[in-house]
Amino acid sequence: MQVAFVSFETVHHRDTETNQRLRTVCELLTERGHDVHCYCAGFWAGEGTTFERDGITYHAVSSGPEARSAFTLRLPFVLAAANPDVIHVDARPAGQVLPARVGATLARVPLVAEWYGDGGVDDTRWTRLATGRPDRIVTPSELVGTWVREIGADGDIVETVPNPIDCELVRDVEPGEDVDVIYARRLDEGANLESLLLALAELRDRDWSAKVVGDGPERERYERLARDLRIDDRVTFAGSLPLEDRIAAYRGAHLFAQTAEHCVFPTEMLWALAAGCVGIVEYHANASAHELVEGWDRGFRTTSEDELAEAILAAGDLEHREYDDRFADYDRSAVADRYLDIYQAVQEAQGLL
Image (cartoon, rainbow, N blue to C red):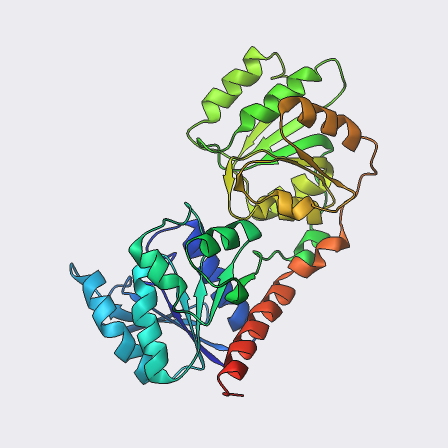
């Protein structure tokens, strides 16, 4: 199958969660042997209009100071000439969905939109227009699906497909040191690590250890808070770690605490749950982490520091695990199947199969 991805900006332009998601989907399909092309603004040196990296062929639809307007004008004709089987467009910016729709119409193929929602979904004229153009809209969580439906998307075309993990890698990595509580996220203004630190402070008369994985502009403030709460001798700030080191830390930990105020999909938490951690989520309106633990006997939802402290105590009664096969449905192969099923469904709906 030849899939044409559309995104003015890629992870090679700017490293964002939205751009990482699109690259991941491209990688999932190349791993299955599909022909993947990405139509974007040029980001490579030289005058060539195409560039191949990691099995993905990038096409420079435009470049230079007028790149965005030229991209919009040229895109429909470039897509029509490419003759793909499916067109898959990133809905951020929403303004590129309409020309992608025109290109899909000219090419007589279905259009799938990837609406990741990092940073929220703005209710603008362009986003409202974009919700009515695709044959299918893919979101990473029910939270983002709700946002998209609220600005006008037909609920029947919105599907949730999570970020993937590599379950084989989880099983292969040796567990790290034992730790009771682990937290992992970029330490920025949305991290809300203070909720966990305050909950742990309530348990200072208990025997526990905690590790914080991640770095960011708020790290110094959180380290200071741990000192002020007199728990800094039991909280280790490990900084940023490579993926395999994070997996080792999760396999050694008993529970993972997710307290971030904004999260469209809790990828680090998913790695930790697959690595055997009990999951504790502090609920926030703009975070989707609670979706991973709903209806699960090793998951807790909390709404305050007191409830978080109680959940940490209750989690101590659960067995320690180093892998949980409940999360096999999030493996890369399973998520790739989800996308391929979507492509097949929209092709069948158009009588192309």
